[in-house]
Length: 75
Image 1 (spheres, rainbow, N blue to C red):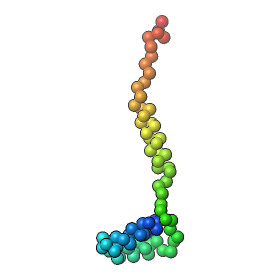
Image 2: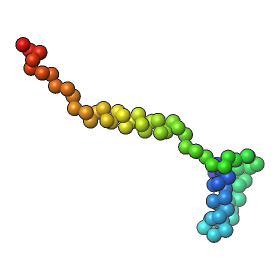
Image 3: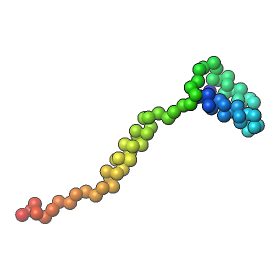
Image 4: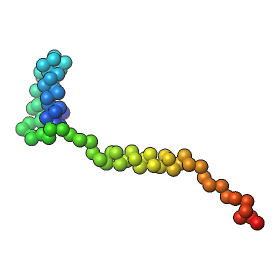
């Protein structure tokens, strides 16, 4: 799996120095990334948060009780 950002590459290098990952793992990721110009950080897509907001709205609508018809209309 290739690196997605410069920050991720730095984190893996730090883990390599600490001995928490093997040099082979780091080299594999580095090789798969190639010579790409990576962004400093990767941000989450806005689409995911929009879906969550829509789901919350739908859930809130379902929780509200239905309006009752009054007896005054029968007269």
